[in-house]
Length: 264
Image (cartoon, rainbow, N blue to C red; front, side):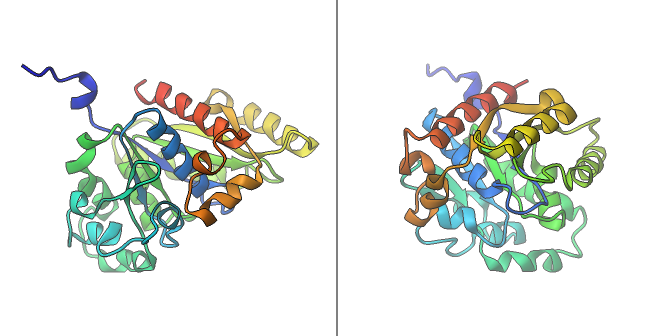
């Protein structure tokens, strides 16, 4: 008789990568964290919920194709049928394109529409160890769907001036979503991105963020590196593009942190 391990029957842990402040490394973190988890032998699904489709374009040479997350949220196609595979990183993708901007209006009459994505993902959660959702840089309909679907939230914070700008609003949104889900609090992890050890500014931001947010800040910091910016242009993750670079190593360590806290 074939034995079934605990990991085979557990649902995926769903992480939403969210911050309404643009330019903080949200999509880069989504893609490369997913790649690092996949490199650990984990089954990973990336859900691109940003109409710009940057994560999809990074991972899939053909883009969203027919259906994608837009068709899934509209109920036109099942999530399993809409999944595409990134052949390089071994990641499954529910892709986005610009049509996704219309879904808020098209689902305006749906009862419980803030939980549409959660419902659509329910049937495929057991196929994965991790689902990583790339949220748009707003706190609108799509971002709320990501947060409602998520078990945990990863918040990238850029190591630059006014790094904490907007986090108060994000925290308030997380509190509202927690109440909606009947939870006291949504578990979260903050990760410092674009860290430059040569500048006093980065050091000051790190100190300020750790003072304000304490133990919820990841120990790993993602360094600023030109290879991170280059990789999407080659259709690669930075782990493929520069496997022994500082950023690749940082994402691998971050993936270990994520894995360690996911089941706590």
